[in-house]
Structures are given as C-alpha cells and as structure tokens.
Image (cartoon, rainbow, N blue to C red; front, side, top):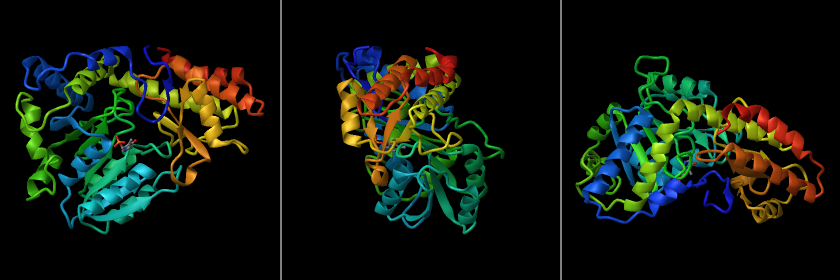
Length: 389
Ligand SMILES: *Cc1c(COP(=O)(O)O)cnc(C)c1O
C-alpha cells in the first residue's frame, strides 16, 4: 500500500492503491461517454449495495450534505421530526432540522448507552412525527443502533426512517429491501459519505430514497434548497450524461473502484469482517486496561471510543503514536482528553489493526505503564482470526 501512515481514525480511512490509481486517472469531461459510463456504474453499485428500488444520489459534498439532502426532501418546515441521538452526530440533526424550521424533538442517550426503545414508542405516541433520524453508528461514542427493534416501532407510528450510515454503510447491515418484523417496516432513507466504511477519499455524499420517501418529497410544495433538492438530481442520476452541477469526475472514478471492491468482497463478508474487527480491537485493548465506553452488546463494528486509564495525557499519547506512524482520533465534547477513538473499517486490514495494537502497547510501556503486548495480540487474534484477509 502506498500509504506511509496508518490512518485509523473514524474517517477518512486508509485508501488502497487501486483507488488512488483511479483517482489519478485523466480528468475528462463530465459528459464524456467514458466518464458517464463510470458514473452510471457507481450509482448502480450503490443501488446493489443498499438493495433499493428507489432513487440513489451520488453528489459532491461531505456526509453532512447527505444528512441535509435526506432531511429537506422528506420533512417540511413546521412538521415534526424525532431525533434519536447516541452522541455528537445524532445531535447534528437537531441543528440541521432547526435550520430549516422543522419542529425537532429529541431522545438523547447517555453517551455510551442506547436510547430506550420504550421511550421512543412513548414519544412517537404523541403523534404526527413525519420522520425519525437514527445514527447507525455514532462516531463520537462508538454506539450502534438496534435497527431490528427501532425500525418496526417507527414504522408502526407512521413515520419515515432516516438512517445516517456515514460511519456504517458498507460495514454494518443496511438493506433497504429488508422488512423488520412487520410487512411494511423498511428503512426509507439511507445516507452516507465516501470516506468512512467505503474507504474512498472524502468528498462524496451518497443518499438513497425508497418509494415512501419519494412520496414525501412529492408532498412538499417547495423544498428550501436548490443544490440539495432531489428533483434537480433525479434526471442526472437516471442519465448521468445530463447536466445539473459538475460532478467531481476524479472522485467518481475513485468511488466506482471503491464500490467495486465492496461488492467483490460481498456484503455478508463485510458485515462479518467488521463485526470481528470491532470485537478483536476492543478485546486486545482491554488487555491493556483500556475499555470502550460502549458495552460490547451496543458497540459499533466500525469504530471504538476507548477510555484512557488514569494518568494518560491525550495529546502526548496520540503524538507518540503519530511518531510511530499510527494516527488515532481524539474524543469529542465532554470526553475530549479522556478517551481516544480508533476506526476499524473500510479497507483496513487485520495486519494493520494488529500492528496498531502493538504500537499502542509499546507507547503505554514507554509512558510508564506495564502492559503485555503479546497477550493483547493473542486476544486480538482470537476474534480476528475468522476473517484473516
Ligand atoms: C462523519 C459523520 C458525519 C459527518 O460527515 P462529514 O463527511 O464529516 O460531513 C455524519 N454522521 C456520522 C455518523 C458520521 O460519522
């Protein structure tokens, strides 16, 4: 791999050579049939990944644009939105909704825990919620959402399910054709970005709408957006030789290759691999006395938020790791300085994660802790072995 450092943050994630090669291909006209074919193929691959018969959008922008596109096309000003939040990125939907005059209600979990489904049911019984946002894996806490429990509750209440998959899509199951318990209980909107579990550099927003979500758009007379109005994009997504706004040609090359790798590995394999990665990383770190803030039952497959043992200085610890070529992220909000976040998703390999575990152990030893890296690696391998790639 061309990368000189191991970028194990919760996105962007390590980029493999074939994706770099695609990115560095000749920039062509956005209407050149050779580019149009690649754009078409990228859109089609997203459709396959999410198993949707609705509309798929692949546009310039980060995950936040995808969140905005999902929301403004389904919920009108004055309508009610329920935000289920497991941390910083869940909370982002509160500000987003308020920016568009949407009436936002929120259920926030204590960081590291899940929102109680009984409270969701109670809240929804107040009536008239147009949609509910769920963050599949909250990148601030490493908490995953239990879709099997929440999707039926939300659909039962007649609201749309908007799923933020920015840190989950392509690594944790998001099947828009799957019925959750009830006949009609399906995920209505999935949104994501290119730079997390898909493993492509940042810059693309990806959104999928099913038929119910498209009907919601139809009922909104005037969407308070131009770039994010899906009606400006549907003709382009169905025929990418048409023009609305110039697509990021090189990034689409890279994304098409990234999606090729995703489908080549297969969704089931990817879900299993990421699940094993998450458990393995956390089991290894636990040997150092480092605990995730999320219990194993609610922990995300894609990233972990790990509390420091007493006596670690966050900045010093992370810069020592950076000198060894391992980049991890600091924690957000009130956990800042008290924890770090490690990503284990996308095109990350078992070898990288094992090496990261060793480097973390070495750094702990250098900073006066006495930890056993061999034991941590053993624990790691116990869980990771099943998916050696
Ligand atoms: C990263 C992230 C976002 C924001 O994506 P950007 O690409 O930074 O705009 C939103 N939701 C979740 C769950 C994320 O992990």
